[in-house]
Image (cartoon, rainbow, N blue to C red; front, side, top):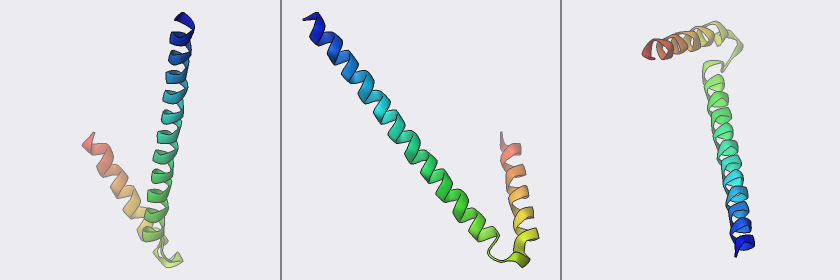
Length: 67
């Protein structure tokens, strides 16, 4: 009985780690896509670089003030 309980615990541990890794990868992909979309919107052309940069700076300052 003890061996089956031990193997069941190991199974749950491995399953939990796998789920955690999958969630972390999904979150990382979502963040990367969001950043890429934001950059493409703010920096759509070379002439918009200064305005895009200032827009991101102002957004980051707003986020800092909120917390």
